[in-house]
Image (tube, rainbow, N blue to C red; front, side, top):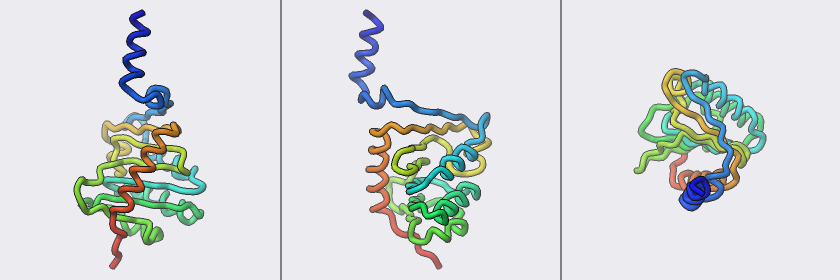
Amino acid sequence: MVAGLILGVLTAAAPLSAVAAEVEIHYAPTENLERIDVELLHKAEKSIDFAAFILSDWVIADALADARRRGVKVRVVLDGSQDHVLDRLADLGDAVHMKRTRPIMHLKSYLVDGRILRWGSANFSASGLKKQDNDLAITRDPELVRRFAERFEDIWSRAEPLRRP
């Protein structure tokens, strides 16, 4: 009786997809989150929608550029107040946008092929992915994927294409 009541309360408080979603979780520094990200980015065949507060990790930036060279449609939105490894993203051209207005771009998330969503607390920096206490979560839940895709489209449309010298 009590277990049924608790399940009923949990189900009523959260959408069913949130209760039923399978989520894979990893933790730094005990795990190297950079390796997990690179593996996910290398799996991309069609598209990567990438949103980041900080992108200073060369390996991640190179994986995005490599995906573009493989014919993957890559779109990156970065926070305009932070320093990024933009030289490593030069091949992405107008596929890099900067969010220069409030609220700040504080996501650390991306969507691969419209079906694999990655999010977490780790900035895309060497220390954030390998040295700090951070998490990284991965799901294929269609509802969570849809919600991120919608949010990304809104952020992308409001961000400015990167102006190169």
